[in-house]
Length: 617
Image (tube, rainbow, N blue to C red; front, side, top):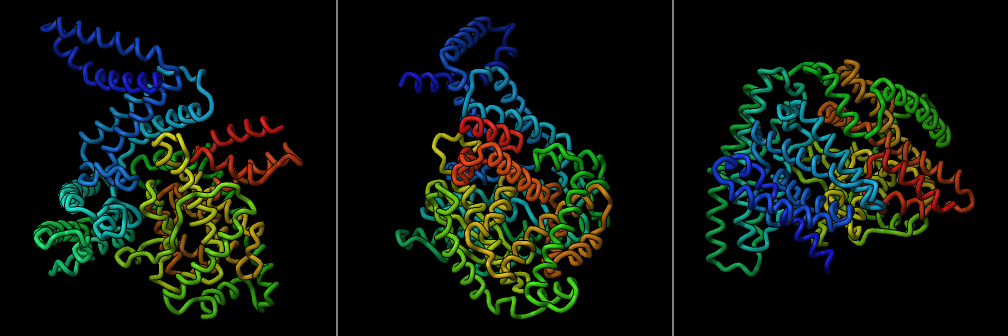
C-alpha cells in the first residue's frame, strides 16, 4: 500500500509542478512568497520521488504519458474504452496544435532522462527503451509537413468518424448521454474538416499534394454522404436502433437533433469538402506519385522507412531484397503449376487463376460462410503451436458498403479491451473476383488467428502492460508477425491442397512485391502504371486489387515494407533460437516469448530473444 500511495503522491506533485514552473518565472520579481511556496513544493516532490525506485518512477511517468496523450487522439481513446473522450474529436490542424504536441513530447523526453535506466529490468526496461525510441522518432517526424497531407483514400479521421456514426464501431449508443456525446463529437469533426481543407489548400501553394489518382479516389468518400433525406444517411442508423429503455419523449427529442445534425451540419460540411476536392484540389494534384518528388522528399521517405520498419536499411537495399524474393517465389509458383498439370507458361497460369469462375464465389454470403468454415478449422489446430491464446473472440464480417470500393481486400479491427466488442476479421465483398478461394487459409491466418487477432488481442490482455504499449504498436512487429504466422500453415496441417499452397505463395509474393514497389515509387521514380504492370506480371492478382494495392503504397510510404522485413527478422530469431538451444528448443515457448510482451521494435525484440535463449541454455 505504501508504494501505491507514494506513486499517487508523486504523480500529483509532478503534475502540479508541471503547471508551476511558468508561474515561478512570470511572478518571480513580484511575488517572492509564491516563489518560496513553489520551491517548497519542488523540494517536497524531490523528497517523494527519492523514495520511489526507478521502476516506480517509470510507472508514474508512463501512466501520465498515456493519459495525457489521449488529448491528441480522442478517437483512439474511444476505441480503447476511455469513454470520457466520446464527445471529442481530433484536434484541428494548426501550428498551435503542432507546437503543443512537440512540447508534450519534449516534456516527457526530459522527464524520462531523469530516470536511472541501470536500475530497470524486465518489462520496466522494455518500457523505458520503447518510450525513449518513440519520443525521439515522433520529434524527428515533426520536421516533415505531413499535416499538408492529412487524409487520403486509405486513411483519415473522416472515415473513422463515419464508422463511429454508423453505430457499427466503437462509439456507443446505449444511453441518452451516448447520443449527446456523438452530437458534440460531430461538431468537433466539422471544425476539424475545415482545418483539413485549409491545410490541403496550403499544400497546393507549397507543392505538397496528393497524386491525382489518390485525390480522385478520395472525393467520392465525401460525396457519398450527400443526402437530401436524413433517413438515407449512414448517420441515421443509431436512430433506427434506439435502446428499448428510451422513453417516447427521449426518442422524439434525439430524432429531431439528429435530423438537424445531418441536414444542417454534416451534409453541408461533406459538400464543402467534396466541392473543394473536385474544383480546387484535384485540378492541382500532381502527376508524379513518389515522395522523392516532394520538397525534401528523399529525407522524408527515409524517415518513413525508419518509422515503419525500425531497421537501418536503405531504399536501395530493400529494393534489391524485394527483387530477389520475387524471383524465388516465382520459381515456387512454377512448381505448383506443374503439380496441378496446367499446360502453358506461368503467365497463362496467372490468367487462368484470375479468370476461371471455379476459383471464385458467386455471392458475398458464400464468401463469408467459407471464411467462417476456415476459422473453425484453424481454431481447432492452434494448440499444436501455441500455449497461449487471447480471451477475446473474433468474428468474420463484410466490409461496410460506404468504404468497400477503396478498402483493402481483408483487414482486422481489434476487440474492445473490456470485452464488449469482439475482434473483427473484415472481408471486402465489393469485388468477388478479387477474393479467390485459394486465399482462404492464408488470409485467415494473417488477419485473424494466429496472426493479427492473436498478437493484438493478447497485447491488450497482458496484465501490467502500460497502456501506451497495450494500445500502441509497431507496424513491423504486427505485420511481420502476421506474415510469419502464414508461414506456420503447413505446421498447422493447412495448405495440403496445391491451390491453397499457391494461395500462401501468392500472399507471400504480394509482400515481396511491396518491397520493390514501395521503394520503386518513393525512391526510384516509378510511375503508377509501372507498378500496376509489375504486379500483374508477377502475380495472379485481379487488376482491381492490384490498383488498390498500388494506390495504397503511393498513399502510405514505408508501411508496406514492414510485412516482409518483419517476417525476416522473426524467422531469423526462430532459426537463431533453434540453433542455440537444439533439443531444448520449444516452438510454443518461442511463440510465447515473441507475443507475451506486446509489440516491440525489431532491435529490442532481438535483444529480448537473445536474453531468453541465454536463460534457457
